[in-house]
Length: 177
Image: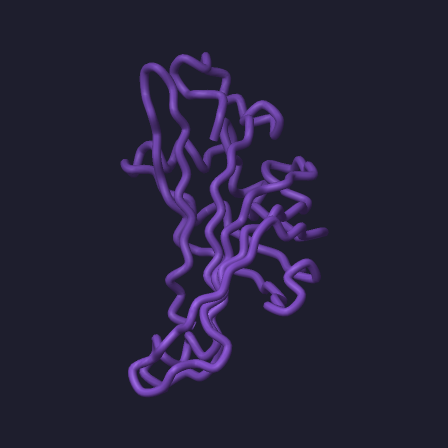
């Protein structure tokens, strides 16, 4: 509800590392802390929301030479399966009363269909998920009520696998994002 979701990205290379963000992350995740393996959902990032450190770089990134944001307006990940690698629970207390179920941490392998630049590939990514019963209520000072799930993901893709080459050597723009 606060629209604070974000993505950061990095393309490293010997001559020019390029880092940036995507400030718009949309979608829906259905998560049951009692059955995390049943998690399903879809994350959608408007390609035009990707930003590089400089305006000129952002223009190049979104151009037809690279991501072609006009032709491929979204980057998407649709969850198809979830494997639970680990789970832990700790008590969680709020400003006024403790929660009943506690803070739950999950380490998951999430498999889905990742779509970028007109190419869709099956991808399995490591996910750290934290479930906080009534966490939204505690965070928002009782203005909004509900649970909170925080998701952290760190993974790499090869640009060439998604036909993003830009016509420059990988010494200038690295092959891995």
